[in-house]
Structures are given as structure tokens and as C-alpha cells.
Image (cartoon, rainbow, N blue to C red; front, side, top):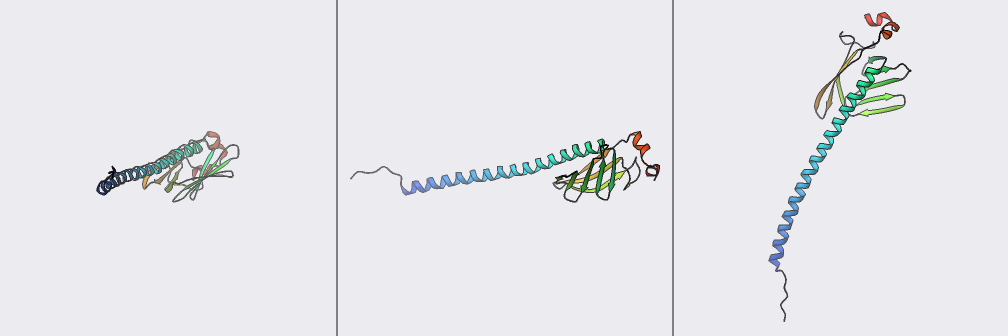
Length: 163
């Protein structure tokens, strides 16, 4: 009878235990890296939303002919009759332009509109807009300033500026 060269049962058990330990460490490392990636992805999306909001709202606010704040809505009017509207909510900002609506998942609180350094105003033309935004449990302050042309002062009723 020939003797076969093979592993003993004990050698197979030791090999299986070592390989399961290596696979367990590999899985734990993969899980850790995957969670960090998901956290990075969520943080990156929040940063992109903040940068987009700052760029778009700043551009819209500065280039508008007039800006009014009614309740939690910023209404921007342009020379060509175009109107853009920003609705500020606790969990999102809606930007409406004609039939298009953009949603930014940024919560807004403490919306304050000023006119040339005056106290908070509503339903009048505003020159400053500020609010606090909550992004990933952190509060960021936004502040936008608009300068009006002399033509806008002349074409609008005087009592609107003197109130």
C-alpha cells in the first residue's frame, strides 16, 4: 500500500482558522474605509451645495434690478421682466425661475433683509440680505449686498425709500 501525501485534519483546521482571521481583518478594513468614503461623500455634497448657493444667490441678487423679501420668499425682478424667487425653508431652499425649480438641501433660519443699514424690512426693496444656514449640523452665516442704480431710485415711489 502506497502512502498518499496529504494534509492532516489538524493542518487543515489551522489553515482555515488563519484564513478566516485574515478574511475578518480584510472585511473590517473594507467596512471602515467604506464608511469613511460615505462620510466624505456626504460632506462633499454639502460643500458643493454651499458653494452653489453662494455663487448663484450672489449673482442673482447683484444682477437683479430690484429685490424684495415677502415672508420667507426673496423675489428678484430683472429688466427683461424675468422674475426669480427663492423660498427659504427649514430643510431646503427652492429657487424658482419661470417653470424651473431648483432644490438645495440647506436649512435656513434667521432671514434678515435690510435697506441701506436700516432695521429689518419686508415688502420693500432691500439692499442687504443675510441668513444662517444649517449644513450637517453646522451653522454658516451668509450675507449679500446689493447696490441700486440711480434709475431705480428715480423710477420707484419716493415713499418706498423713506418709510
